[in-house]
Length: 400
Image: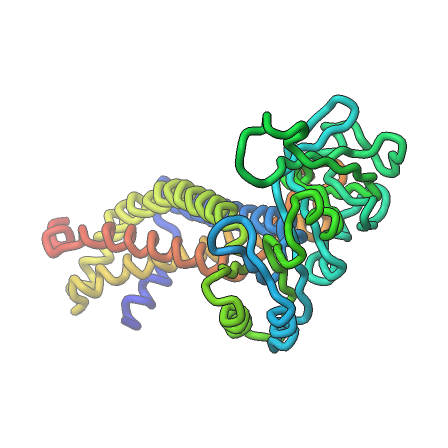
């Protein structure tokens, strides 16, 4: 191995007597560098987009959320609330009541969700930090809506003369014709407007929990979910099991990823597809190495014959070019990742690439992406070098 590695290093540093071989080797090396840098930059870009996309939903999402195992609502007793307070690792929890409603304002309407919350809601989520107009005031008369709802309905904060109207179908059975008014209605003045991302901005109107219960005709112990904020040092699995034990099979508990499972699956799928596409490009680039090693082998046939006559085996000679290809790939991959890291670092530091005039394109430097690029380039380089070195045989060397 030491003999083969020594010769491989010599061949890697030395220039061929044929200028065409030198040009091919340089182009092959350059393609490996560019391909590695491109793959690393793309993976870092998708990592930044994933973090950026999830940051929106994480503002609304608690660490854990309890939802009904069946139906839309479940009951919580005073004893169960006391048991939740005693669960180790739960910093705070908040009850909510959520249902689809119709919003109207000055002959405009929009279907959204009313989310009735208690006073602890701001302790388990950071939704109050997303206010862009007005303030976060939730009581029996005032609430908060998304900027998307505000634009659709043409409503803004503190419209006391023309408040937002919320309509919810009355629960129960029977034909609507049997009642003069088949829905409950309440007025709400917006104290604030939040802005996160387009989907969430059109989805929610936050109100007090008593107002939502009255509108939806629910009992004082009925809720649609419980949001939990956990201590930083706690084990989420143990807390999850303790909460599940209190309610039994009446609820299911979801962590942040499970609350937006479809979003995570979409982002992971996009990341995988992009990785495969760029890996395919890298395969084409790295397999230029096969041609370059072929040319190098043919150019060094006289030297190989001398080494063979001096006692080197065919296996040793194959290993020379195998190691030469691997060294070329590893060095090219290292330089490519270094260039990619400098590009990502400059984007993080200066934000030279913009999505909007005020928003830099999100990227993230992750050590895992470095390992992925090196592993990919090493496997491809090893495979290409193995293919190229396999043409060396006794007949090739001795027939000169």
